[in-house]
Length: 112
Length: 112
DNA sequence: TACGTTGTTCGACATTCGCAGAACATCGAA
DNA sequence: TTCGATGTTCTGCGAATGTCGAACAACGTA
Image (cartoon, rainbow over all chains, first blue to last red; front, side, top):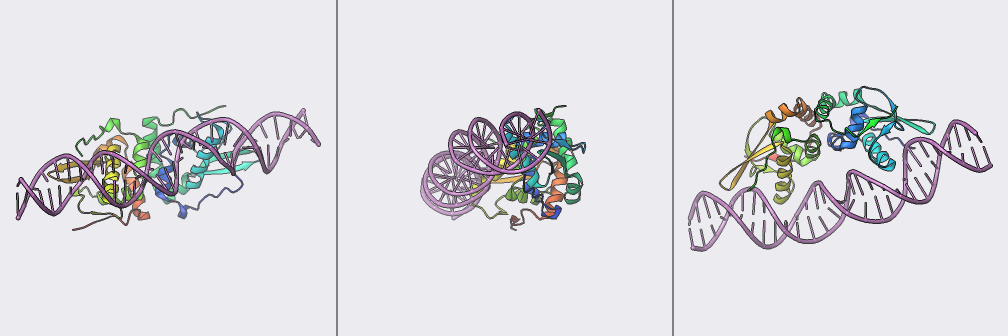
């Protein structure tokens, strides 16, 4: 993550955001971040290889869904709820609610 | 469309719906249907071949976003707003609003 | 300095997707 | 019944996607 490349709110694309959220693993990660907490993704437990998870995090980041911060060798990620709300009002909450009722991405969890 | 295969509301998958709506052409079609009107898709003008449009309509139908009705040789399509609202409350309106501000799928129109 | 941890990048591969043209099926109309 | 209109399906192609392992880079620490 040498070039974080987070898009500005105005540069966010709706189809890109929807595509980013149409994968169970990525939606699972987003659900874990729904409470606004920032979490280091060494704590993320997903049923994929770490290179795959890295790729998913990049997709979320490039779409503008998450913001990644680097501290030493570790990365921390959190939802860009405010930016998304400003750009696409009510979209993220609706998707999160729907994901909750469907329990999408339940195989993604956070380790203590 | 000999086998319409519209999923029941309970069988709708969130990731499937999001994937269906993450394409500009399909989102453009959905926007045209947003007012609840049913329209024969001979009136649909999209910058793709008819076989491609047929494929997109199938994706929307299989995801549960639209319902297709056949009358003679012609097909009519409309949004399953109520079913979607029951399954994923507030999701479709949020996406439609976002698509409107982004003007996604503007190259899809309806001919008189 | 050497090592281990952490995350990225690089092939590689199988799958899916978007797209188009051609052939086909179905139905109404001449 | 023959023809035209309408929509589906088949096949093919290039691009993108999800996945993995291996190699790499950056940083903290023993």
